[in-house]
Amino acid sequence: MRFSRAPVCDGCLQELTPLAPRAQCIQCGLPFENERPLHESGLCGLCRRGVTEFDWGRCFAAYEGALRRFIHLLKYDGLEPLARPLAERLAPLLGQAGPVDLLVPVPLHRSRRRARGFNQSELLAAEISRLSGKPMVAALLRRTRPTETQTGLTHRQRRLNVQGAFIVARTEAVRGKHIALIDDVITTGATAGACARVLKRAGAARVVVLALARARLGIIPIASEPAPPPAQPPSRIRRAACGA
Image 1 (tube, helix red, strand yellow):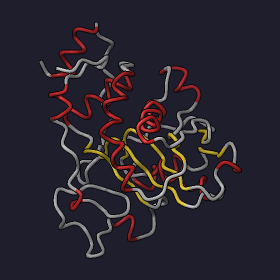
Image 2 (cartoon, helix red, strand yellow):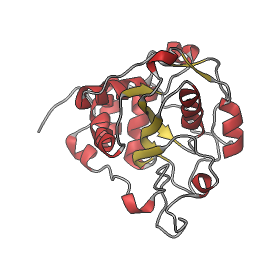
Image 3 (tube, one colour):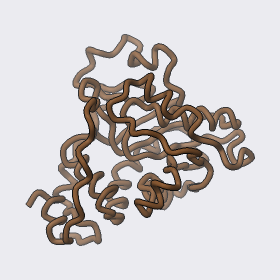
C-alpha cells in the first residue's frame, strides 16, 4: 500500500468515477445522465444560446458521492494534502484542452481567503503546474468584492451576482495567451464565465476551464448547502474520508 499525507487511501480514490465523455456538452462539459438532452450539435441549451463565455470546459467527475466529500474535506477542514491526489485526476484533461500557455486559479476574495487560510483552486493549479510543466500565475485574476453565495440562484441570478467581481491585474501577461482557468466545482459556469469575460477583454486569445467536479443537469443544488462539517481529530477525519 502506498502511503501519503492525505487521509484518503488509494482504494477510495480509485472509486471516483470520471464523467462519461459522450454524455456531456462538447463546449462547456455540462454532464447529463444520457445523451438525449443534448442537441444534435452536441451543445447544451446555454451554449446553443451563446451564453457560455469560456471556449471549452471539462470536469473530472460529478459533484456527488465521494468526490463531494473529498472537496469538503479540502475546503472546510483544511486538508491541503488532498489537493495533490485530486489534481492528479484532473490534470490529464489538460491534454484535451488544446494549446495552453498559463494556468490561472479562480480567485477568492481576500476576506474569504484570510478566513480559510488558502485558495483551494490555487492549490489544485499549483499541483497541475507541477505535473504538466505549465506555469501557474496565482495573482493574475483578482476578485474585487465579496459575492453572495451562488447556491439557490438561477443561472441569470448567478451571472448578475458575479458581474464586475473580477479584474485582470496585469493585462500584458494575458494578451495573446491561451489560458486554462482552474476551479474546484462548477455549477452553471457563471463564475468561470465572468473570469473568462475579463480575461478576453484584456486580450486573452482563448480561455478554457478545468474543474474537479460539476453538478449534473437536473441535480444542480437549489437549496442551501449543508453547513461545513466541524473540525475533527485526524483519526476521525480519516475514517470519514475513507468511509471506514
